[in-house]
Length: 512
DNA sequence: TTCCGACAGTGGGGTCGCAAT
DNA sequence: ATTGCGACCCCACTATCGGAA
View 1: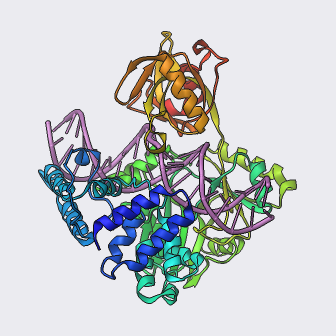
View 2: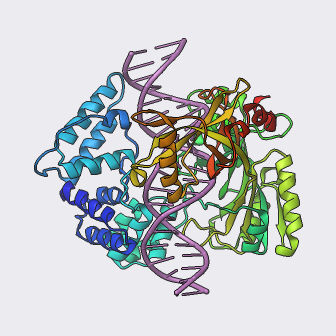
View 3: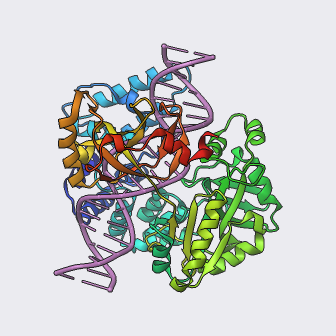
């Protein structure tokens, strides 16, 4: 199959807004693909590369290469060349990768070049990624979409399922079962703005503390233990104390879901930055483990002694968990009967925050474990802080925000009547706000740059954020975590904006 | 007809490890 | 030694489609 055929199809998919049409287009191509092309075509159509990451980013792609006039590249050619590029390492590798990418781009037509850019940067912008590709695959093979989604969750990859399905048809889905040692896509939580809202939606539920660490899936099969992240990367070698903890549990074969986090000597959680740094350390694990020891804290059991627990209600999965895992290694929790029991949920949240944790997750007691589309039975609630800050600059947006000033640079007042930048945000804006702020910020512009505009510091904006963290990038030494716009405050003058001083005072633990 | 769940898109900051300077 | 870059952690929010109510 020619690469141009995929590039053109992707273009067509991007051109239609109807999801049903996107699905139909993808299904048609899945049906046409040769068996040998399938392992390549499937990830490409879901906007990804079968090789995963290749060390190719904007710096390597930032070259102007004249496109070829006629399409000649086969799908397999592109794949072979990318595999080659990914294999280049060592001194001079970046220049060599750049040269090879240049050669590939020169062999590609205009449409193919654009598609390649999308695949390599992970921004295909065709309005169809894994989930829509799953629908297309189901449609192409006649398999029920829900069964395909479940198989993908169990296989941890669309590609594996697609190959089996296209080769052997719907019966192939039977082969995808929960297996100890093979990671499954984790169940995720949605957000709720308050405990009351969450309890209202869920009814009887468990309220569990939400730890600010790294998600971990622990598999044990006898003496073999493997640890996986949320994206199913194997991090076994980095966390020997977790392996040891898993081996001490009195069970031979199980899969547990939880969080890994670092605590200080008093049992309070250390900052997310410290936990993340530890989990990210791969080279000198022994030293890292000594300086920042981490602990597993579990909240779910997916498999026990060869039994698949995924479809059991949460209550029963938790019973299994509690039988295996001693209390200190489990997430703290309380049970709530329903809205009339709200006070208990509120009390638990307050207590959890006092302990230094991030918030709570409320989980429906009757819900199965599912990464598929079965509604939000896990709801997280975290406290939100707000500030009035001043817009210092704004950057031009990309994709559907092209032509709009999007990413705002946010400043707080300083003691010397100036402003210190605390970070950026592009979140929380409606289309109307984008249009309005583009016009307003242009009026305030003092300098036009390629990336955007700097403005007179006059526009006050109300910002929500999850907390403060240390920063080496910004002048105050701190930055906002997950900043998002709530609304513009034209009724406020910049002199009424919040100061760095009051911000630091509100989060004493960060600079202590 | 209206409502709402699921998805894709739009990017944010930090840290680590490797290569380049 | 320091800097730049890519990968991978954490993540919020809006617009839109299409099935459910």
